[in-house]
Length: 457
Ligand code: CO
Image (cartoon, rainbow, N blue to C red; front, side):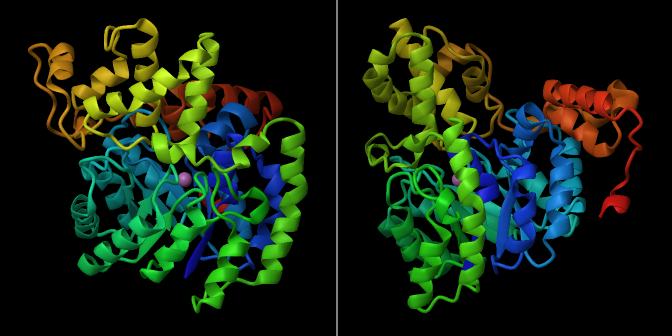
């Protein structure tokens, strides 16, 4: 049974808004490399944005540093298909360059998903990953709805296999996949496709560890865990506990338990520091069985609370929680993962606070209804579609094909401020944050030589 350690990415992102700086974990990387993990998820997701926006770090530099300490362990990242690590669709040339550069800088396994499970939106990234010699892990976002069933998921699995992916991931971002559902889904996929199946869940609702056990029993190839002091709650189930359990049951996880303990000992004071300064609120470590009722991710619930607090309307939370699944139904049951989780949450809040449903429709929701995010999993409510579209026909092709190549223009605009192709990609992904970072870098080291990848690897 393969174990992926998530402390550097998903645990960091789910528990403390991705604020872990490289300086805090650089010294444990050599040790982590000896633990026997199949892979370490260490990049992608929100880490890229956070490096530039909050930590004053070059995300590419972070990746190269991690790689230089990890000779035995595969590096893994999460990529939002055509959205890369941002919140909009990028042009195909940007996607290809970004994926290629990720691999050149040290990435091994790229887990690629689309929020709508529209496989057209992961095809370019998968294709480039394979061409660049990476391991492409095609992903199914798991959600519950009247239209999502085993048949639909197996269909998606077949598309992923046909695309040439090396493995498949079932991604349960909300921790709502029950042990039985997981067993049935892994079994159904294994009956129809040959790819190794990885299961990703969160401990949010308390189901996670049980779900992983059933994943193993159903023949999954691997699971994602977090070292115990960064495990539980909105993070993953604990690495030590799962490997302890699984090895007793005859699943060899290949990990060295002494090293796992040392890794965790290293992270305990770091976790405590972030709790003391308020970055990690111990509240997120608790079990939220309510999510089984609302069926919305923990992160989305805290966003809704924050939005309502900002509007001085926290007393409307129950109404918003009732409205959220209705908005989701009207939109054809998109999985509640970034960016759809935010879009659905904001629209539900607006519907409640304005007092009339869809009197104001957000511009992202309009783009979604026009088909710019891809194909909705189910039918969009006809009245809402008519209101937004008028006489316009929704797009049926891939939105990315309407976006002109972005790289040449960005390169020209940045001129000497960009020291590498990676810099240009950072700028395309997060223009403001990248420019801010470049300015800081220039002011600190005005004579810094330009680097090439070969020199630093
Ligand atoms: Co996750």
